[in-house]
Length: 614
Image 1 (spheres, helix red, strand yellow):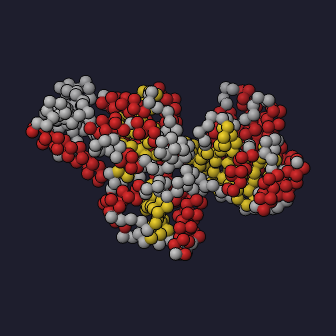
Image 2 (tube, rainbow, N blue to C red; image 1 turned 180 degrees about the vertical axis):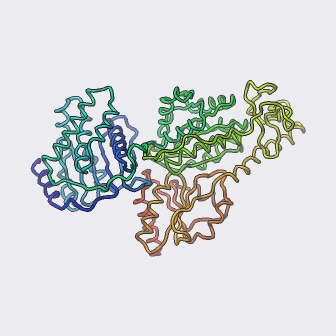
Image 3 (tube, rainbow, N blue to C red; image 1 turned 60 degrees about the vertical axis):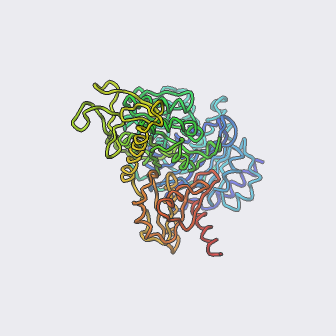
């Protein structure tokens, strides 16, 4: 058995492997939950970032603590990248299932490093030969036991040592990354350094011809940071003056809670892990009433539980920010897969009608700015604002250049004392723009009454012994119109779509949220490889929908494709509602996997081929 594996490997390595340098290089490590893959993926990304490469990371996870199949994808480039892609240059297979799942993604002349102690290669023999995939067979379990019999995860570091040696890039940066990771734990650091060296030595002694050339890094090392979408949202909230976070853990929003709980004392934020999502949002409403900026975060099932209190925030005109990190639904759905199916549910969340705003950041970098905008809109217009993220944006990581943390903060109309315009404090004063000044508890000459029922200007209820009386009829209508006057003002402030690609192109792809990066790279590829021209319109500000800013684009759209990850075409229908315009075609993938440039290009190609054959 071992002889056959070595023979296969030597056969593959007899080909010329020293081809031209690769601008982009994709690495994936697969195994079972508990193999330490998340930590290994994080260290690898920080290492490449330290060298000055653009980095994108994507986790492949299941709802398991141990067992199952999980993977970490790390992609590097000497040019800026906007999405990870499925095709692979290097695969580390710690389990046989890794080959069964990911072999289909391997490029021709790519490498797979297997743990020969666990992976039986024979059944993959023919496919590996046909596709010229080179096998590096390492007894990783045995080698890791030589360092420490109890540290099976050292197999990961051995494999990374081989990878870095294969690429011919400096090992010192990874050693520095390990020192930072295991600082103060000298025994663990020493074991990992031995494992790293063992991987390098084993590759050199057994695979002399193994070599891959990647183009040099182009960024200044250590200037960028590797950060996830959830962490970027948390940073944006912190920069915006967040002072209270209440949250119940749920995939894929949980890392917002863990990140801010670790930073709470540093930034003066009160962080509370609530007993459930309903408690979390009501805590936030109470804290916001006192005048501080608040946020909660959840995903589909938890967002559903917040519905009643969401209406309360709308009725009381309380500014709160909610992060909905969408996952595949309904019900439990697939917690570790992405979907864009919550737009409708957020637009119509809670019974009755109440103002709200919905923003959907398109990238990790943009998540910071969108969060800042969300807090300012919440305060200025005194309403709940929902940030529609999703599993892909929340859990993906990327190298982000240095950015400014000092941001503009707009707290809106604040009543601090009597003025000619507002001589008496009325919490729900009927104003021309629908926005009433608000006072924080402790302000002299201000009364503090808050009811979830319909109310008059002084916040006295109309639902009790005043209900049905003539004086309440007119006031109810005025209050309703007051709340919705704000929405028309807000619509003017919302941004329209952004155009990318060839102007007046033959084809336009429309998308929203986190799919923008993958669509952008697909557009770039189509423009390079086809005689037809392509562009993209991507949306961030979704509700209230800025239809007047979309209308000018319509006259230049020839053939259009709406791309969104839901069954019913939610943004497509929202656009049609306001403009009577519908796209020529729609693509709505539902398999749960994050769309990539390759998958989008394939779906577009299949769609156009079907059209030609009709």
